[in-house]
Image 1: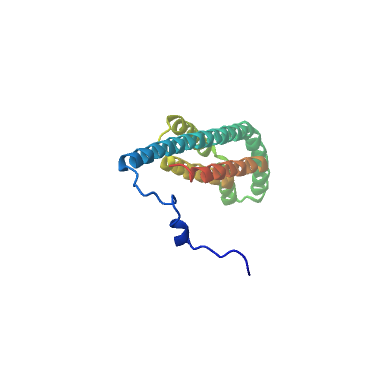
Image 2: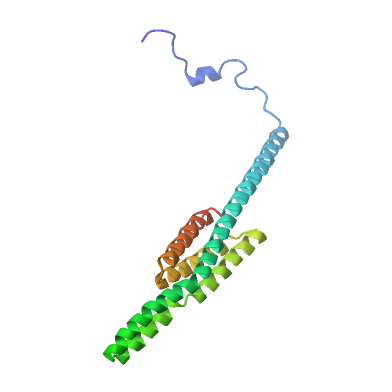
Length: 190
């Protein structure tokens, strides 16, 4: 290819004024660097504070949504218990007709285990309250929130496994989704 000859970097650096003949005073360079570092640190701190505020709001919104789901489950429990008692009564009538005492005991034991979700609901409520307290307190909360996510997930899993009602199961799955969304955000928090 013809045209202008190509210049090397060394040739460009030899042009007058490209490189200063006199070195800049070190104090000026240090002052300029310190100014830039201070500005960058201020900008970085402000950006982290904005991001932290957004994460806090997101987590609080998820916590509020969890409280609504838990309240919905609590409100639904009398109906769930009534329906399950009806099914249990039918099974017991069938068992009584056949004279199977062991089966009656088994059905009562299953009923007691399946329907008792008070402990899980109490723990979920307590963990959501702790989540809100930790977020309000601020500071370095990543490990605390990570632990709370594990506990919330454990209780939501237990609630789902004990559920005898489709609406309660769906609410437990909604809780798990909200917890997972928060868990993803917790990974971004110190």
